[in-house]
Each structure stands twice: as C-alpha cells, then as structure tokens.
Length: 392
Image (cartoon, rainbow, N blue to C red; front, side, top):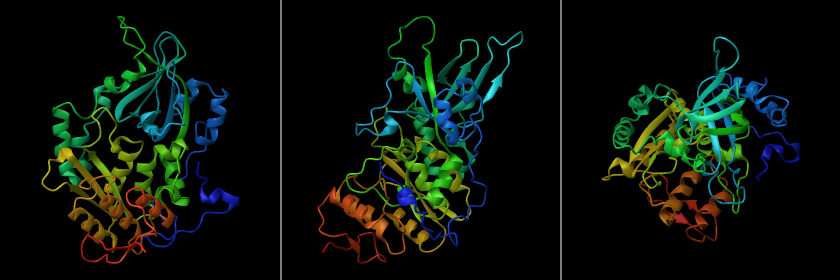
C-alpha cells in the first residue's frame, strides 16, 4: 500500500497552491468531519464490539460510506487484480438513519438507512426483535429519477436524454434485484423473499472527511499511479473518481474528466458514475460558480457509445483546455489503451502549469502502450490536440 507522503517520516503535508487563490484551505463551507460516535475515529471500537450493531446503524449520517460484510458471502480477495468496487459491497448513505417505533412494545422496532450500493438505491434495516441487519432494495419513492434532476437538466441535457432512453429500455439504472442477486444465490426459492443478512458494518470514511483528506493530502487523487503500484486502501480505491472531482473543487486540480456513460462497460457491471460519492461530487461541481462543466459526446456516434463530463476551473488556462478537450470528444472518443490514448492522457498531465501526475507516473502510464526512453515532453500546446512529443 502506498504510504501518503504526509505520513512518511512524520512530515507535514506540503502547502499546495490553489487556483482558487492562496493556498489550500479556501473551501467555503465547513469540512471538518464529525468526531463523535460512529465516525472513522470510532470505527475500531465498533469493530471489536464495544458499540452494538444497532447503535452503529442508528448513528449513520447522510454522506457516510460503509463497507458491508454479508453473512454467507466471503470478504473480498485482496490479492486479485479485479477492481475493489466489483468485489466489495460499499454503501453510501444518502439520508440520516431513521427509527420506526411499533406501538405495543419493542417487537418490530426498526432503524433504517437509505443509500446507494453499486449504483442502485437500497436500504439497511436493523430489526430490533431479531437483532439482525438486512440489506434490501429501497422503495421507488426513495430513488429519484436522475434524468429529471434540475442540475442534470441544466448542465448535461445530453446525459438527461440518454438516461431517459436507457431507463425506457431497462438498461439503466440497473434493477436492484439483479444487483443484489449474487448475495442471495445460495438461498432456496421458498415463499419468503430471500434475506441478505449483514453480519457487520465498517465505516470507511464520510464525504466531509474525504474532502478534508483531498484538501490536505491530495497525492493519491492528483499524482497518478506509480509503476507496479496496487492500492490496497479500500477508502482510496473506492473514492478515486469522487476524489478527483473533489481535488478540483478545492483547487488542487484544474481539469478533471469523468465518464457520464461508458458504453464499453458490460451491462451487468457498474458505471463509473456509480462509484461512491461520484454523483454527489459531480453535483457539487455543477453548483459551484467557479467551475465549468462540459459534456463531450463521441462525434457521429450515438450517446450510448460514450459520454464524458469535462470539469474545469472557470479561470484561464483551464477553461480553454476544457474546450479543447471537448473539441475532440475526450475521453470517450479515444480507444482506451491505444498509444494515442496514452499520449493524450499523459499530455493532459504535462501541460505547463498543471499540478497533475508526477513524471514517474507519466512514464509508467505511457510505457503500457509504447516503451519510452524518457518522460514525454509537450512541445506544442497551443494549436491542436495532435501534440508533438519528444521522447529523447
């Protein structure tokens, strides 16, 4: 696991200049995480049983990210290269926990949390009578239509149109029953609906805490991936997409690309926007007056093939670079893994004045397509996207 730079030799994080002006710390609203019961500082105690499962669930707040351990389902294998989001069951709470009291005694009392699990709206319910925690699909009323949300209509009309079409043909959002099916595969087909029992819950982080970390120690979300690096920290793996967006919001990045729709993803798998906090962070970008958001479809192709969101600071030169990227459909229009894709990706990180990707990470990324003898250097960034490269 990569050790955050700030923790090596007990050094303090470097002061990083922000495009928002000044240094880090220009966030306009409070981002200090709650250190009370149920916070990350309290997770260790909760895992050893000093806090009951009922108390844990009752203390869940909107913006908490939980890792669920499901009864009868093995925990994720840390040795495989399969993405963690495809192996582990994360739950992003979108509301505070609620308690329902049943008249006539404690039997039947429940604590419920609504949240997103692998892109679908689900609910965790603690049943006081049986002392069990279950995961199930939430009601339709708990899942607002993404295509008709005001911020989506205002900023991404193309995406709204695409989402309506995908919804009408049953492609997206995916059925909660289908998403949760692997957790009930071993259960019989009796008259009762299969129950997904959660044996324990681990709070990984929360949105405020993640924002604080991206603000003060942004390396994981800004430096790129070094050669032969396999990140094992669940918090970092799960929040890569959202963390990049938050890095832009706090001023540590000038441009971010994220996939609104990846047409090359298997229909049974999660879309990039389904990653924890990704939708929440994208919405915040759209509502920020100092951020520009652009949609980049693939020219001449239906939207189902791919649609990218380009998010940038409204200041120069970031906005101009965002417009340039939009002009050739980055990123969905590029063939992933091709030399051209790798070069353009690295160019984005090496444009003069950018704070993205460190040189060793750039070399490692390019070398996956074409071996390079030196870090590529952009020799022309002002005319077209067909950059000239010098590889030494």
